[in-house]
Amino acid sequence: MKGKFLQALKDLEKEKGLDMEILLQAIEAALISAYRKRFGSSQNVRVEINRETGEIKVYSLKKVVEKVTDPRLEISLEEARKLNANYELGDMVEEEVTPRDFGRIAAQTAKQVVMQRIREAERDLLYEEYVSKENDIVTGTVQRVEGKNVFVDLGKAEGILPPTEQVPGETYRQGDRLKFYVVEVRKTSRDPLIKLSRTHPGLVKRLFELEVPEIQEGIVEIKGVAREPGGRTKIAVHSREEKVDPVGACVGPKGTRVQAVVQELRGEKVDIIKWSEDPAVFVANALSPARVLDVEILDEENKVSRIIVPDNQLSLAIGREGQNARLAAKLTGWKIDIKCESEAEGWERWWNTEVPASKADSGGEG
Image (tube, rainbow, N blue to C red; front, side, top):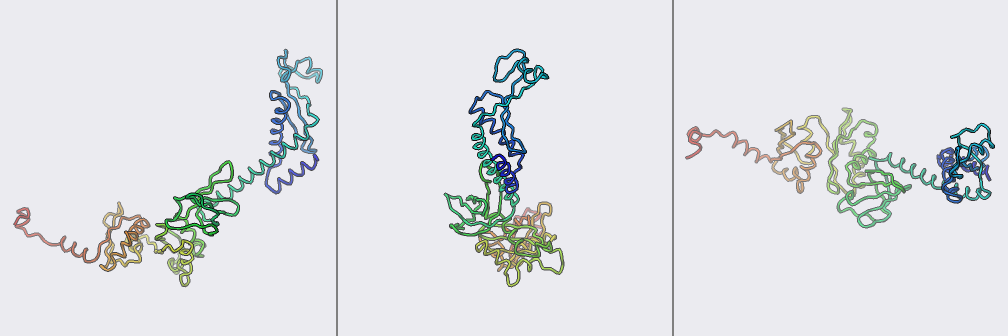
């Protein structure tokens, strides 16, 4: 049985990645507690598991003193020298005190320790596996909905989709298979807490990275993402090779790539914008699908711009409840003031009209 015990620990070391020496040390510590609980908590003992045979022995530790006040912890110099003539005051004397039935206690204790360590090791491995997926996406199946929280089966672990990370109007039913963005992985006393999101801009970014080979190869780069979950997303892309159209690469043949992303986002509209280092060009592109006539940089330091669009494009440029303009501003980092062509021309005419000298001199009174 002793040999089988050591072999079992060796097998666990291979299968579970548990360090056998650490396991043995943990079992020894647990056996000390078990011995004290059974035979006296005040005793000072040491438990040793032979690394070759698996034999378990308990040793009583007593300090060599001139006058014994507590025989459970102390031994006189005279008695100590009966055991070994070399003992001196202050030395520790070890005496084997292994009980007859200690094998049964040891077996139970060892089993408890090993099982606990296996659970801890599995939790650690699970944590390490999912913490490496922070800021990445995972595929999961909706397991259940409790209150406003959605619990997702990720295969080896369970994730939670809190209400703050749920898309407004999106429903989650048991069995739904979706992709989620991993916001945070936190250690707990049980399994790791895996916080998921369906609203994070990173979800859109990673979906395009999965769908577009040019992004995976580093030819096309995602420069920014602005998102209003459930409504619309704008994504700015740039190509490192002149011959590759970054927008076309993300749209894909017959729109297959962008449609795959839209389908995963359950119909959320996606505008793919060509990034430019010229802020005027970038701002104009960001207002897509509206056509822009002119971009005026009013304050470069504070990033303020004025956009001129055709009269019939004003509502398109602004978007429903200002969404298009709002997302363009978020994507580019510029404040955007949108004017229609006729309004801009009227402003320019007013601005350039010369004021009669008589009125100017009289303070404008007629």
